[in-house]
Length: 578
Image 1 (cartoon, rainbow, N blue to C red):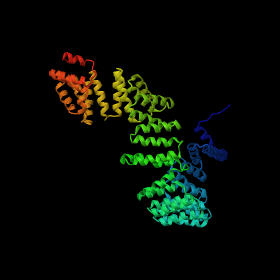
Image 2 (spheres, rainbow, N blue to C red; image 1 turned 45 degrees about the vertical axis):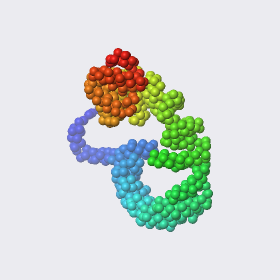
Image 3 (tube, helix red, strand yellow; image 1 turned 180 degrees about the horizontal axis):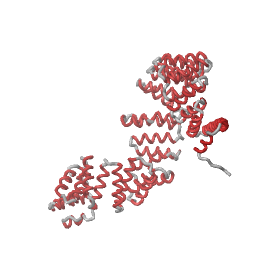
Image 4 (cartoon, rainbow, N blue to C red; image 1 turned 90 degrees about the horizontal axis):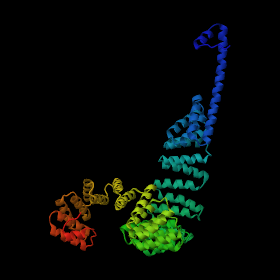
């Protein structure tokens, strides 16, 4: 039979008798020992679980497990150290420093804890303090070169170049001329405006390995960056004595010659550099590419840029990049036929680069050749089904060829891909508005225009087209008038927008205002030749009872090629037909 006691009842029993008291004390002692063992086992379990999580790369779980361990044994220096390292890994600089300090306080003689403390100071950008830690480590371990090197690096980051330089000098006296050490020293010397001293450091590397060209490059760059052109040129000439076709030296000397207006030397050096097939085509392209921007400011740069691209092609006749760059040059100069030929050549060598296909589509759109553009864009959408611009240009070509359902399908396909630039999304919705209008899908047309205006709220062309189509249908004329006025505010000298606004006013039966606006438009020569504007003027005049003048303008519209179905009847019957 089992007997159950309440807590109070059990306490009362335990208070009775000396024997019972002696038994209780013994029992408590046993319990304490047992609890200590349990806690120790629990702590060990947490420690090994944290170690396992750390090895698996689950740092956040490891942090939680180590933190739980410290609730059981807060004076474990190793666990504080492990937490500091983990907080550095997860980029929690503040906590890293807290636990690194605790680890060192608990075990100041452990050099790994000291290194972690220095790291924690560094990630907190307390570079002075980090350097002090390594100063202490250097005193304790004078043969450890890494500690002295880290001290120098941290002093440099603490903006103490002289102290950093002293540390590096001391290290050099121990280890001799070492490349990384020399690089650190020359950077500090340049920061202190000690150009000759920085150059002397690099010369140590040159004296040690006189055939290593990159040391000469570094020396020349030091002189060049500090306007010591003569010294830099001398170094580049030295490079050419060792490597006569060295492109980097030739280009640098060409640049100096150009600054001195010595164009013969400029072209001689540049031609020799670009003729070197060992000189990376990517570096050549990078050198020439700025000419595309310079051509906008200086048209004389075109010939220079084209000459450079011809040198690249000569050295790399089977590389598509050379022809693509030349195509970019021609395109920038509006030499569209030449650009087309260059892009086609590039694609014949490498048809995997979508950027070249894009440029060729752009050329066809600028040449207003929708048939060629449609053929090309069909090819592009097959090869690159995830590229937005292929479907965009396919939609443009279909619209220009009056294949409106195909245009709608292509433009919606572009929207489904959804990775286009905002400016092109505006164009797509605008063109969809035009295409839906052409197929009498007016609700979709209006919706597309509204979306276009959300993306391009200051686009006068979209406003004009949308408002004009509304006026043709005689729907939502207040919205049409609002948009048309806004387009005129943006482009007040546009006779086309004046004509649209006049026609909207006409549809609102505001014939007097309509006449004023269309007569403003007719002050421009382009409007005087536009048959639609002339016919609109005739319609307005008729409704103002100026019948003879109206018929005169209808006839002028017909003579200019107006295609209105009812225009012949207007003239014959001398009346307005809607």
